Length: 195
Image (cartoon, rainbow, N blue to C red; front, side):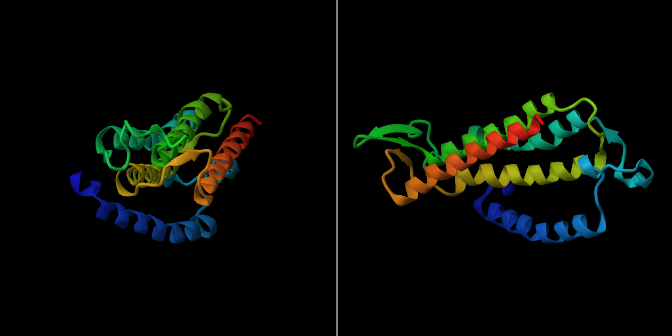
């Protein structure tokens, strides 16, 4: 496990994840359409090797949870104090409020996955299509890698410049605009989940 938690292994896994996305897209787009959500059309076409079908709410919780687990684990046990220290998350300097960009991004990532892993499954329609075990397992592999890549990067690999209020530079302003886009996107996502 320790070999996994280095900057070098993080870089390797990030590149591998990116490279594997290309054949994954081609296969899932043109060869095998997984029976999930709107793609569940005809139970006669269901292939036995997709495995048993799980309740959609349980499946969703299982495959989204690794993102939450990684963000918690990385913050609690792997955090580099030079990159994200508890004392430097919020400070007031030169008449500016300064916030740790790394902490803010990790908080937004965690908030998003609290919604996706816990709140959304609780709000799901009880008549949602069941999800094959193979689809749940595949999605879980993706979220294990995603949670590791995102969380480890924010707590251990790269220190971003602090966010300031009022914004002190163009880069800082872009960061605040990015947070605004995130908030708008998450609002749209939550609203669409309820439709």
